[in-house]
Image 1 (spheres, one colour):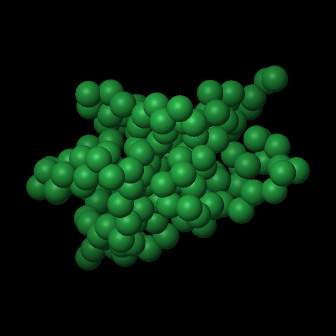
Image 2 (cartoon, helix red, strand yellow; image 1 turned 90 degrees about the horizontal axis):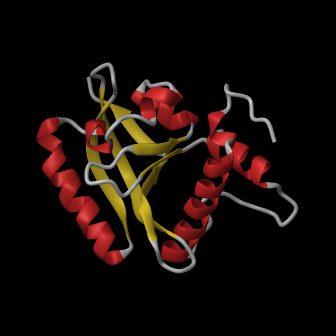
Image 3 (cartoon, one colour; image 1 turned 180 degrees about the horizontal axis):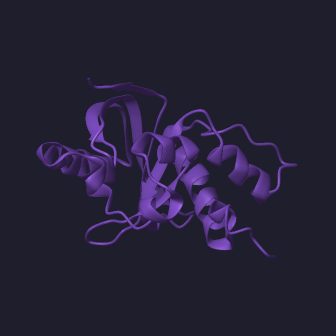
Length: 161
């Protein structure tokens, strides 16, 4: 299958990653990240998540985790293109002063599987700051409970003047 380079979220490995995002979100929360029908193809599901009206972002399991997915709302909010986002250490989504709190939060989610109702300050690539509110952070796992990373979703954010 040939994938348009202007739609990198439709690459085979990302289609598989999106399935892990959806599976693990449901595994931890009991809820669906997006509504899915049995008739939807992986491509249709990937497009639905990429174009959702809320943020979804994830990183891998590296010692300094690199972002490996962000939907269009995430790209817009952090003011990055796909290539920039997916080469950015996830710690850079928070200001230096906020990073220790972020690390504690990720460690808590790693132990519990997920956390909800998180509120914190994040920073876009151009320096714009914003609050995120009611965020859910979860471990991205497969059906064998292998850890593939962590992800976050939220639909509430507000610019900080």
